[in-house]
Image (cartoon, rainbow, N blue to C red):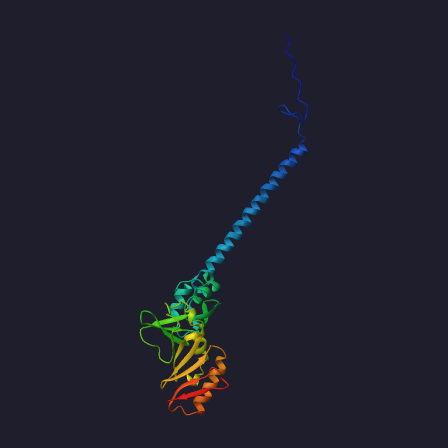
Length: 268
């Protein structure tokens, strides 16, 4: 019995069931896969290069030559360089790149004596801090018996057990708190205290709150000055300066400046 002859598979016929694939299409698919692999490889290499560059740059920026080596504090007489460095977070090994000038300025502005601060970096290793301090214009006694320095806004700048020499005293305008707090009740008295001319300051001892929202001064020699309401303060201070310079104060008990253009004297 003769065995059946096996016919040869025509060119391009699939090995298994399915539609035959043209050799050119198959080759194109292989080329696309290879191109996609090369793109992925390039992206990986580029990413590795960028990461290496960033890492190298960070290493350089955090290297010893680019650390803070000099801290210059300008305009401060009540705030020490040590306190500024502590507030700014600046130490012996602090990298320049890690400093945030805006954040440091906000931190320094919270100190009672500092009105404003400007922080600048000067590469490779110098930081300057330009400070504008507040000015004390008066003092007031606290409930615990201590004395507080106040600026014109009512900010408590400092507290001590004894009086501050050379500062006029506020009487009747409330009790101050700890440094950094605000004595808002003393606004009128502080405005008067800040308006006292430099040449009169040695003679003015106290700014007092009088009944009815009036304001008085107590001068050396037990002379009282009635200012009336805290308006036209500068005109009243000018009139007081003129009177003290031109009029003899012997026997004077009260100077009335409620109308600065028409001051009056009461003698004993």
